Amino acid sequence: MRICIDATPLLLRSAGVKNYLYYWILHLRQAAPEASIVTFPFFSRIGQLNHEESVAGRWATLAGLALLHFANFRNNPVMNLIGRRVDVFHASQQLRNPPRNTRLTATLYDMTCWLMPEMHSRANVDAAKRFAEQVMTRADGLIAISESTRSDAARILRLRPEKMELIYPGVAEAFFRITPEIIQTARMKYALPRPYVLTVGTVEPRKNLALLLDGYQRMALSTQQEFQLVVAGPLGWADRALVERLRSATGGVRYLGYVPETDLPGLTAGATVFVYPSLYEGFGLPVAQAMAAGVPVVTSNVSSLPEITGGSALLVDPRSVEDLRAALEGLLLSPARQAELGQHGAIRAQQYRWEVCAEKTLRFFGQL
Image (cartoon, rainbow, N blue to C red; front, side, top):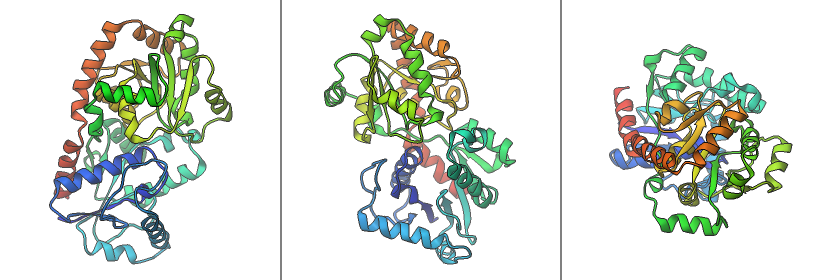
């Protein structure tokens, strides 16, 4: 069995999809026979994960993007040449003309471009719908990263549920192997001597950061003085007022901007509480990472987040400032509840291992 995975997102500035593809490909190559997992464009070696830059060298990146541009010309047969050599081609959203002479698969991440189009750029919405028409509706099989995503896709795109295989993504091993030294290094690097509440993610409307800032600043002043709110993540398509509010660094709020992947385990594990009031998630990787690190979580009661946390987090209405404030402040003032949720979350996160994901994926490909 020979599988080709469209890895072009690894050449671009990206967050969740790039993280998924990076670890997924590495673990598939470890679990599968040698040379059975290839990529488009071809990477013999994948460098360190960086969400802001390509994981390939400069020339490999330029050559790969040029090949993608060439392959996207209408009626270009180049992808069918690749299709002849593989049993399955796994497509990404950047490729407009996947091969038609082999089995076709793709990953369903979320349905926000249909459910919340106002929270995306017009280009993102158009690209997602084009990908659905050209790939999802004709694919031989699809991987859904949560039952929530699979249900939404079946309802919105009218896809057959049996066509979609539920396979949870994994969490990087570093989040499961936290030491006091790793935490101390992160706290020193980012100058975080005080206890802190952490949220991680691209600054964009769906992450609901304005409501989080409101909820934090409505807590008792003594609680704010004891616990900082630390926001980590690159700027996306955020509202200018929110960006200015984050950058002003007032009221106990620290905005760190983009944090390298190597620093996230220590930064996450050092938090007293992890908070994530997103309005919709296909999986919610930062939540799973915090659980793996044993950090208690406050997150939303919508989309996949109740499914992923499985009763091991405090769930709140992401539209209610008061609901978030009460849950966050109550947890911060209860060390016993923190310990309980942290332990339950760490147990729950054991099912989000990349080795498990790779094994299930290879079975999925084999069944096709």
